[in-house]
Length: 178
Ligand SMILES: Cc1cc2nc3c(=O)[nH]c(=O)nc-3n(C[C@H](O)[C@H](O)[C@H](O)COP(=O)(O)O)c2cc1C
Image 1: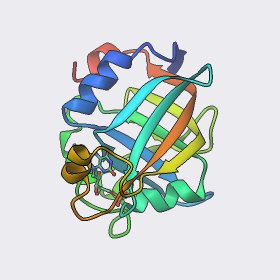
Image 2: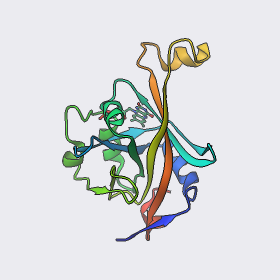
Image 3: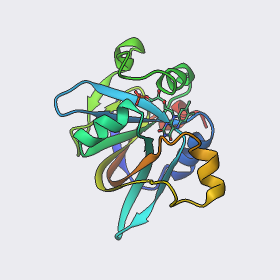
Image 4: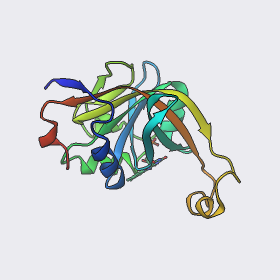
């Protein structure tokens, strides 16, 4: 099934909805290494430096965080209906311990604008390159949020991914959960 390039913000509503309800897949890989997918529920889509951006928040403990440090690209993939189990596994198991693509029979396809792969079973994906990153540090966030999100440390690194392209399958409307 072919994939068309679409407007960068065409799927912003579906992306937000899915981030709040079940999550999205963040895919990263070392150069020439195995891809890994983790479920994300936090992220921001918008405009920075006059460009479209997808900013993701990855805790220091995640295997994905190590991969993001070794590559400056990632993709974010919207799950198709029926991928709830994959979201659950990618959100609870670490790529340090299992090969999630293999275990879940996911297909890694090379991006169009980036070397980072996307999940072919996902009907929409964003291709991003890291233009800026910043690690949250103790005492920077208002106390109420810091207490809630970081009781034991394990801060997030925010990766600001410049969106280089968004791609959707032709029958995307039938495949998305919404
Ligand atoms: C619905 C959901 C949303 C999540 N959102 C995030 C997130 O935004 N950032 C994060 O660091 N971890 C998030 N997680 C946790 C990671 O997905 C989880 O720790 C995963 O096993 C990490 O995989 P990795 O070690 O292969 O990178 C989320 C988990 C779930 C189930």
